[in-house]
Each structure stands twice: as C-alpha cells, then as structure tokens.
Image 1 (cartoon, rainbow over the protein chains, first blue to last red):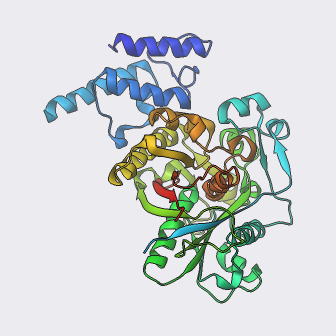
Image 2: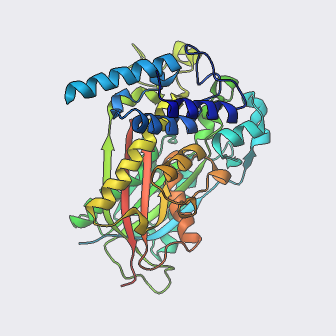
Image 3: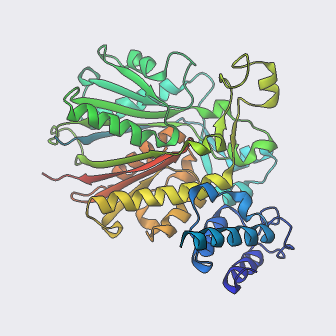
Length: 85
Length: 342
C-alpha cells in the first residue's frame, strides 16, 4: 500500500487533470493523472514519503505507470535499502 | 590564465511559425502545443538557407560585439545536429563563408543541446594551454528541415525551432573601446555523460548500427531518419542531473545557489524549466527563457539564451551566471561564470 501522502498527491493530480484516478492496473500516464511535470514532483514525493533513494538506473517511467507498479517498485526499493543497512 | 566570453551573437530566421500553423499538421490544437511545451511560436529557415548561413550571421554578430574581426579568430568550434552536409562538418563551411578568416582549425562538436558546455570547455582548454588567444564557438540549427510533421511525432516536432548563437572566447579581459558590455569570466565547467540512456533521445539513421547500409528504403519507411524521444525518461533524468550539476559546481566553488544572479538553461520545454527552477528553489525570474518565442533550438539554445541575457542587460558587473544544459546521450552539465569589472 502506498502512503496517504502519495495517494493524496495522485488524487489531487487527477482532480487537476479533471479525471478520475484509474484502477491500480491502469496507466497513470494515459489517464492524464501524471504528465511530464507532475511526474517529476511525484518521484520527488515518493522518495521523501517512502524514505527511498531512487538510483538513476531505476528512474524509468515504466516504474511509475500504474499504482500497482509504483507499489511493487517501492517495495523493491525498500528491500534493497533494508538489505544495504 | 583566465578566459572570458567577450562577444555574443545571434541569428534567427525571419519566418515565424505559429502554433496555429503547426497544429493542424501534427493533429493537435494550438492550445495543446502551448500547454504541453510553453512554446508560442518558433522560427524556421527558408528552403534556400542552410545551417551555415545562420551560423555565419551569428558569428559575425559576436565578432562585432567583441570588436574583433574574422582575421583574429585562432580556432573555430561549431556545434549542430543539422549540418549542411553529412560530410564535411559545418565548421569548415562557416570558415569558408567568413570573409578574412584564416586557415585556422575549424571543427564540429556533436554535443547536441549540451553544445555550449562542451565547446566552452574546449575553448577554455585551448586558451589556457596558449594554443589559441581567440576562439569562436557557435551552435546553429536548421532542424525544421528534418522534422516528421505528422501526428505520430507531435510531441517532438512541436518543440523545435531554427537559429544560431555564437560567442567569442578570449584570454583578454580588457575589451576595446568599441566593445559593448563586460567580459564574462568562465570560472568552472562540469560536464558528464551517461550512455545507458543513449536510445531514449535518438535519430537512428543514417547510422552504421542499422544493418548493411546506413540509410536505405526500409529505414526511410520506418522513419528512422526522424528523431524519437522517450519524453518521460528525458525529463526525469534531465531535472535530476541538471540540478545535481548546478549544486555540484556551486558547492565546489564555494558559493550558494542563492548567489547566482542569472540562470541560463538549455531551452528544452517549459515543463523542464519549471521543474528545474522548483527543484533548485530558484525563482523563475532568475531563469532566462526564450522558449515562448524561439522554441527548442537544440545546439543553439543556450547560446541564444546567453545572448538574450546580455541583450536584456542581465549580466551586471560582479554578477554570477550559471549555464545549465542536458542533451541526447545523455550528456549534461553546468558552467559557472562571473561578469568582470576589472
């Protein structure tokens, strides 16, 4: 599950894009919730809210395309960070 | 030994292409282009004009600004993604067209939108090693001639404009009486590359990675001679890497970003400029932008922004200027400069 702060961001982005937040397996890009501007803010928020550091190699749009993918990505990043510590 | 930018020049085609003219070709609306790029119009060259024509005009303008003649150029560095010919490069063509220019070295640097940083670093090295006293760098594009003007390429083709910018780089901080303005000392340059993303912003053909021929009918049918871009990857990487370059170069020179008076970025698109300003907590008033009028002019972009800063009297004595760029490759970096009053 994503944090309340992340979900609030996505809901606000959907409202600003005048669309509904898509289901967890549908594209945030194609729905218009995340565009190139909000995507940058979204990634910054993910790092701070979820306490993860995203390497350049993982900074790929496909990791943020759906809510399910974001959840899986955050879980994987947290696993890497836990393993590192 | 220090080196200085002592002259600034620009050249822009007369023809203005508005969003209203471009939008029907790309299957979008003028408002969509404005909203997704921040671009209101761009300039495109006429059919009979080439990149070198724009470059020559910009170089002459820069020489005039520095009160220098073509005879005094020791080294010419040209940057473009849209050369007159595949071979030779554009720099020898510009050397030929510059009346009075001696048989100096004239080379092309294919650094895309990071052109200004790569060319300034080379110019600086040449001057500091005393291989040259006066170096001219230019970025010039006539890339409208290579755009895919179809809906499938709307997100890319809406961006680009034509134009040229040039600077005179010299070891002399004292300008002649006729020169206008103050010299801009180049204090530091940081440039980096991450080739893992080479295919995210690319024109594949002509190219030797395309099979037996570097350009054939299949390549043309597949549109490999047009640019393609993974836009989301570009902006994610660009904002992070440019911001890191800005922080790194200021920190290693012992100043803070708050002390930067003018930020001169590559004019990619409005989203990138806004995201960058936000990430660096820099007010947009400090960021030079000509995107709305000229679009993304690739190699010429930051040269034109620098020329604009000079023209708008934003380079005051003692002020710091930070040049930032990001390009296909990916390449990126920053240059820290200070306006001299000594």
